[in-house]
Length: 378
Image (cartoon, rainbow, N blue to C red):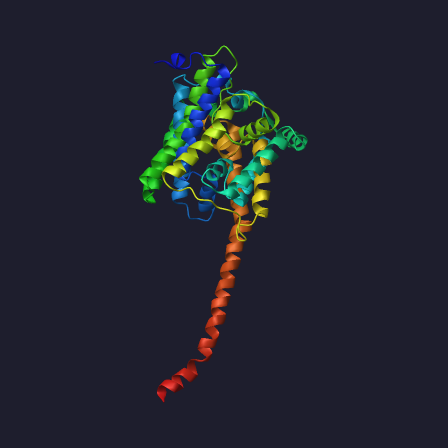
């Protein structure tokens, strides 16, 4: 049965929503199972402890690149109709937005996709943070923060003809680069004894991004209506979905409307099946302030950078969008600086306090040692 026969009788919008739902379910299931998270990978990397979490992220990124580049080479994905490759981009937005997003995901405990995945497993902290990300993203897109976003974005623009660095690479360069990344990731995962299931789940998570590009491109090629070619992203789609639920009696169907609930349902299903669902609330140790600030940084930074850690970093990176790679690099940098200033300094201070406490407790024992010797001698 062909795709055309399968979807016969459905509207263009309904087909887009079904594609989004299928891609979202797959991403939610395997992102939850693989523990895919850019924030965790960044913390490992910058602390000089790169291991399993870093390997998971590399596996997903490499798989996404291989899948997307392969489909591009065989003509299954029409890059001429992809917005990120054919519209003017903002390098200033990628740099500043990436730095803000990277900082925010460390403070909030995860990037936008990770917050959505974890909220489906019963984590109320990430659910609240995710709502803050969504509200701030909407304010940055169309509300009170949009003038600031537009001003920063205008500082350094990139012509539509310069959005991709594919022309800089040799023939099949994108596919070769993806293979190199994935091979290195597999070696790194084996070296650090990554669970085979986590590794497979990470690879499928990345392939889901390529699947999104493939299915939306197929839809655009077989529809009489204009269909945007896109894949997994969270900052903008989450904002549009939430605002649609709030402002409209009937949510208009599109890819994003299927994607966001699909990721949530996929993660929830995976958590229930594996018995990993567990309610988690704010505590005195976890606090709320840093979650709020981090989520706000991600909401504004994600809209400024043109996407979140997945939307700009993996999805945009897989099709060689230069601003996406710059944004991804700045996310890594922002995460490393914030972790060093906030968490590592705090951990070092706690370790110093604990060492001082243990030393103070040991002093009376040393002071009593001569008396103890005399007693034993008698």
